[in-house]
Amino acid sequence: MADTLDTVITEGKALPLGPYPRIVTKDFEVPGIDRIEVYRQHGGYAALAKALRDIPPDTLAEEVKKSGLRGRGGAGFATGVKWGFLPKTAPKPRYLAVNCDESEPGTFKDRMIMEVSPHLLVEGTILAAYATHVHHAFIYVRGELAFAGRQVERAVREAYDAGLIGKDILGSGFDLDVTVARGAGAYICGEESALMESLEGKRGYPRLKPPFPAVVGLYGGPTVINNAETVSTLPAIVTLGADAYTAYGTEKSKGTRIFCLSGHVERPGNYELPLGTPMRVLIEDFGGGVRGGKRLKAIIPGGSSTPFLLPEHLDTPLDFESVAAAGSMLGSGGVIVLDEDTCIVAAVLRMSEFYRDESCGKCTPCREGTFWLVQLLERLEHGEGKASDLDLLNDICDNIAGKVFCPLGDAATSSIVSSIKLFRDEYLHHVRAHGCLVGPGARKH
Amino acid sequence: MISDDVKASMRAICAEYPTAQSGMLRCLHLAQETEGYITPAGMRAVAAATGARLDEVESVITFYTMFHREPVGAHVIKVCTSISCYLRGCDDVLAHLEARLGVRRGETTPDGKYTLKTIECLAACGMAPALQVNDEFVENVTTASADALLARLERGEGVAGLGGNWNLDNTHTTGNGAGASSDAARAGARGGKAL
Image (cartoon, rainbow over all chains, first blue to last red; front, side, top):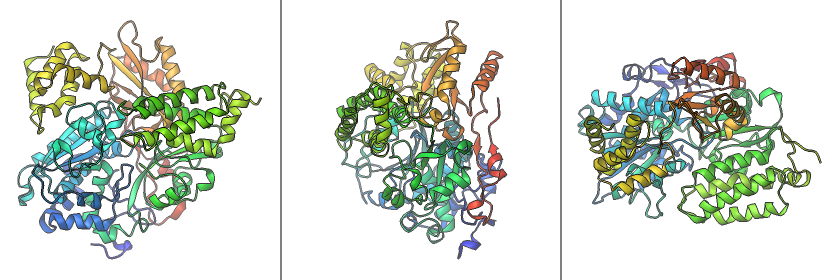
């Protein structure tokens, strides 16, 4: 166990330290880490063995609460607290669903975990199930991610064969079955209640909440739903201990997370960094800055469902509180960079088409509203809009956000409302000049 | 054809869950892999395995975009058009493929070889623009590499193993501070291959 940051040793292997340690992805370059033998040679499943031997489930849950781990899917809710919502006793079995339905535009970390190190995901799944007294866990893999799905399926098979899943795991008396389920093309199924509907073999319509899944979830039983990266962080928390883990990050946003950097940067990619790392460090030092030496125009810090930020926000620390204070959300960690030649109306139109296509159609404001938003943005982008369209866009957004079953509605409005606020003149230029301010469709008059 | 073996596999899938209907999506995937698209026979087999009514099966098929309700080309090319791919030129790639194949998005070539589609964010934003051929990834696509891709498919070669160009070696040298970025950070692609 680590006393100080300088001496963190896990199973004989020093963690790469310095200001930017890798905790979750530390072994991702190791060739063959997707196979159980190699994963175990690098300390894999040691955290599980330690937990089953030395840490009672409730103590483990308490340790995770102490670690301050917050969900990496987008909402950022404290994982240990979420587990605490499970009722102590219930007439029906309780379940765990691991959400690997990664499809938030700008986000590509869960796919990497599944493809590169699926056993990390599986070990984390077993730990989460153990801590929450679950005996049947589901790993719901997005349908389009066929290779990732095969990697997870094989890892689960290998873990069964090694006695790490199944009856009486490692002689502990703990039983667990793990079933790998597959989606089939529906962004909405990343929303936890829609995911449960999909797992039950139905259309992925969100459920009305409350009751929350912790009380009435899969098959009517109490259900924990955790993101893939969230559970993949659990082995490190067990190995390091909550105290060492909380040495990284900020007071309220503990540990590291995988930031997905995309768009107009020199080196897009996944970068695991401590929460609270300034956005400038991610974009400039790790990402190599804006591509082609161009100037930065805007940043979407947490996937396409989060509001725009401006170059003046570059020094914002990437933690939940600081990004919220700057006017956006840390979301799924998908940091999208837009350069000076990007037409903001065209970019917003593209993101809005996504929400129109992915609205499940259950709630009228979202189903009809997202369609209407796209029509208005299209006519603005093509120089046929009116100044009053901006008020109309805001009005429609106001009638979607908070007035539907699930967060997709709010998500659909984020880029529109924030861009009208931050780039109002560029919208109005489209009205005046009947064309874009910048980019291929630019027209000056 | 949905053989007795396939039907047995469907029943085995459904047995993994507390309720048989939970096997629905995996059974539909299996039916589609077997016959190329969801046929009436495929739907009936899935209904039988899951215990769902035929109209319930149909309601699920129509909700999820991956299920084809009619025959598709031997190679289904799906080009991601979401924001990160958009910012890195997916529209050019798509237009190029439309021109090369002589079809519009959503259409199948008359010889039945290719179906060209668009798709929402594929979780490949760091390797944008990205596309899939029959669910296997091709990343960092340019119009030139799109030509190489079509040549490869014409030669009868698949694309499995080309995807997953994860940049994993992202500067985690000890204590170098904010200036830690290096050539290593640039070079560290792993897992994927060029066309």
